[in-house]
Amino acid sequence: MPSLRELQTAFAAGVFGDAAGDVEDHIISRRFSGARHLQIYRNNTFSSLTGALQAVYPVVTRLVGEEFFRDTAHEYIRRYPSASGNLHEFGREFAGFIAGFPAASALVYLPDVARLEWAYHQVFHAAGHTSRALNALAAVPQEKYSELTFKLHPACRLLASDYPILRIWQVNQPDYTGDNTVDLSLGGVRLLVIRRYLTVEIESLSIGEYALLQSLASGHNFEQACETALDVEAQFNLNSCLQKHVMGATLVDLLL
Image (cartoon, rainbow, N blue to C red):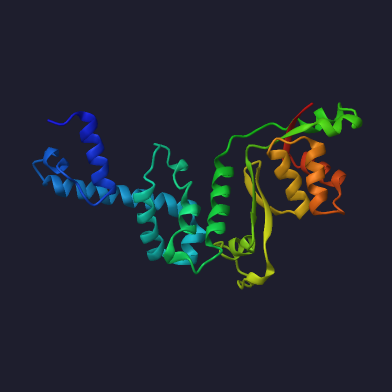
């Protein structure tokens, strides 16, 4: 007789794989066979997880169509079964999966669209944080600014892409009514995805602005972040950028 752990492992393998092994013999029911019960559970599991993915990735779904998305999701679920009881955590690896999925290779921008949607999802569900940066900054002598390290709002993410993914995202929103053409030759974007109050916003950033925030997010002090920003954008306005992101609560706290 297999142990409980062995039965559970075999059952999970039967749900997420094609081979059920001997686990069907241990499913007892007066109504259906063990194999039928396993199939019902497999169908319900894949249906629920596919629905969860579609909720996170509606633009990807629209770009590829529901049937293609469903087939892609089923393959993803087999490779990356949910490891948490919280469905909000499911789908983290989806963008990377798409990037290596041969059937989606023609849509070169699709993995980055998925990354944008995952960032949006994370920001929507992230913790809130009271901004203390403005008051704290006012108490710091200007000559000490170079030593400061900043904390970014937990409900924000930075994202860069070689493709106009914000435009792609915008024209595929349910309430969008304008021109829906997308010119891939427009090139890449650098984005800030942030939740302010109860609204998730997506902002385009200049190359210097993105470099500054990315450097601060990596734990570098303000002087190091400024050097990084100026290396990529010589005319970058540091004072204006700092004021904007302190006032806008992208930067919520600081340490000296």
